[in-house]
Image (cartoon, rainbow, N blue to C red):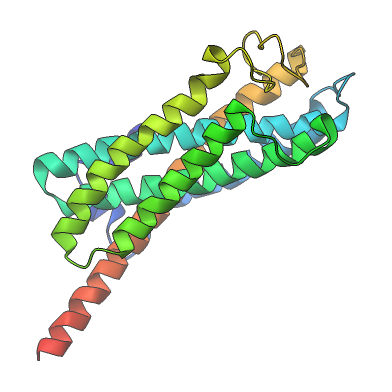
Length: 253
């Protein structure tokens, strides 16, 4: 994580934005991300103990919880990127923020859909308007609107400026989704870490193997996977910007 955040403000062009050879560090991080992801899934399926109440469906929580942690990290990074763009007016910060929101949006969808898969056998429904589920849905829709906003503004400077402000404000939905099970006693959504609300349905106690698996999955989903995806997305956006610049120049000629 530290490498990518340092690369963004300092040497984005050389380390991340280069359209030439692929940086060795990116290759290493990508390999680590893939290997650790496979390891985390294997631990979730085979190493972690089976919950005596929920059975094997509980194993989806290692992905469900960790994907939200990853979304929280990169969407928070997008707030930094948006703030830095408003301050510096440097396009690389808008690219950084865009990559963070795109990756965070995908991870939020993973969190939302895995939660629905878990809810079907535990709550006997794919969806219920529980405070936590509702806030998660609002969060996803809020960030979906971010892409519509960017697509609807033609002027690049205006688009980047408004998108930066919107991305910073949208993070409030992430914070609400994170804390709502701790401030709303009527939620039936269990808390994996810490005490669950009184009305929670489907809670469980973590054994040592469960805790080890969850801890490892949290590192994989919040460090290796999202930052590798962000780096690739930044490179892709920089290539797209170069292509658009060449197209505009060709049209002028």
